[in-house]
Image (cartoon, rainbow, N blue to C red; front, side, top):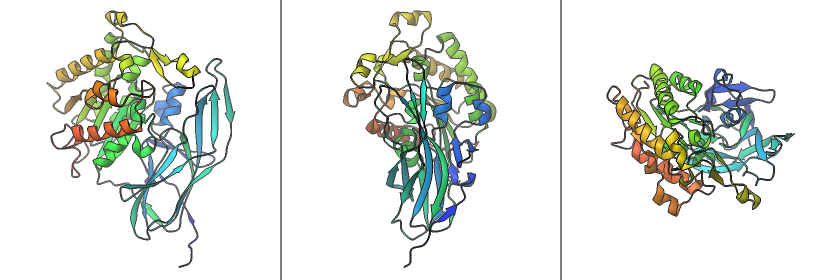
Amino acid sequence: MPVQPLKTIPLTASLIGGAAELEHTDRGMRPHRLPDWALKQCADPQLAMVEAQPSGVRVAFRTRATVIELDLLRSRTTYAGMPPRPDGVVDLVVDGEVVALSPTSGGNTVTVDMSTGRAERVAGAVCTARFDGLPDEMKSVELWLPHNESIELVELRADAAVEPGTDSSRPAWLHYGSSISHGSNAARPTGIWPAVAARESELELVNLGLGGSALLDQFAARTIRDAEAHMISLKVGINLVNTDLMRLRAFGSTVHGFLDTIRDGHPSTPMLVISPIFCEIHEDTPGPGEFDLDALADGTVRFRATGSPAEVAAGKLTLTVIRAELERIVRERQQADPHLFYLDGRQLYGAEDATRLPLPDALHPDAETHRLIGERFARLAFAEGGPLAAAAAPSAPPV
């Protein structure tokens, strides 16, 4: 059989799942996980960096193609004197099975000198994720984009026609959280714990895991309020501690305001509030958190807490304080909101797990632990008897 030439496939919104907005650039299209109006309300460069990293975003279509190529331009941020981060990965999923991966390369790199704040920018080339030898039959294809790099989609090519492939019959799960939900230290985009849970439960994931930026901002609450979702989960706590952003008095009212805003658009959508997983450095010691400079001098990335347990009496937050306050708030609100639920994050990863699978940098889980958390969450939240089980059923309408 003669080799079919590859045809350029127009990249349209109908082929993109998991993104809030698509920015058209000189080279192509950049997926964003927050809408432009939300970004205009916050000039934080950390937020701008992480929301443009397409964690959970995928190019999805149906096709008979045996060869697929995706040109993309990555943008990375590195830090002088620190070990380089691993290359990003594009995961190929065919009919629900992860069958191949393609590492990214080239692209644009910003290197930040933390001692001076200076940033050096180096431009690089477009790379191509190529997948061949695929079966010559109609199939569902998903290209899961790197969770840890900003990506511009430049061109999609295939040797057969494609049609949009996002599955509207699968319930949509919108999840909000920190870098742990974003996928820090996961090895590949289908390996971040929300992707593990979503794929195991056959759900359409919208991931608002925002590294360092799960700070209960009202623009995030309004983004969730306006999104279509069959179920919502909110993982709250670790960023509020390691940024030392607020005290207990502000935390309680902020949580209420965040939930109230979401309920304005989702009055009866099942919503699960999840407290932090076990993290020894912040269990009883407030933030702010910072890099452990002694470990960094040895080439190891590790974090430490800089607060004092004595400061808790003055209202400083720890993970222990946050768990107690979140559970109290949810229990009180449940009296008027039967669709609101609470999950102690230590059921996903607790002190005993930390003995067997310690957090490599004292803050983020590794690839194996992401898988463990995702599998546990699927069982605790979506399986029969779980708080989101009814919403995870295929026939459930979005509310």
